[in-house]
Amino acid sequence: MASAYAALLRFGLGRPLPNPHVAIAAKPALATGILWSAGNACSIFAAERLGLSVGWPLVQCQLLVSVCWGIFYYREVTSTASIGLILGGSLVVLAGVALLAQYGA
Image 1 (tube, rainbow, N blue to C red):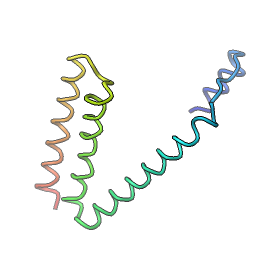
Image 2 (image 1 turned 90 degrees about the vertical axis):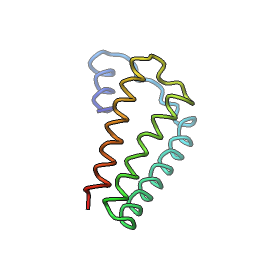
Image 3 (image 1 turned 90 degrees about the horizontal axis):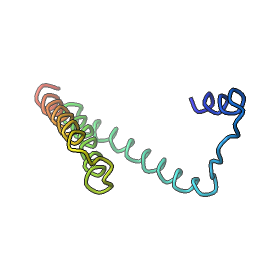
């Protein structure tokens, strides 16, 4: 997708490509990738060790933690309507977690 966008900018519209700032972005990008990989590995181990009926619902609850960070710490969402939609989605996730924990065996 990024390659198509770059080709469109360069050849289709004749605009120069944006500077990716590799020297600045490389370290945070590498740290993010390492953290994501570690979290993914831990989620796989949790699902293996606890069983899918317990481990997978716990893994899915990370969505709620991520949403809370975005709303309360980073202030990414400020409108009441958007927070209401997120709350509704969070309730659906919690219902799915409860159903998986109850009937997932």
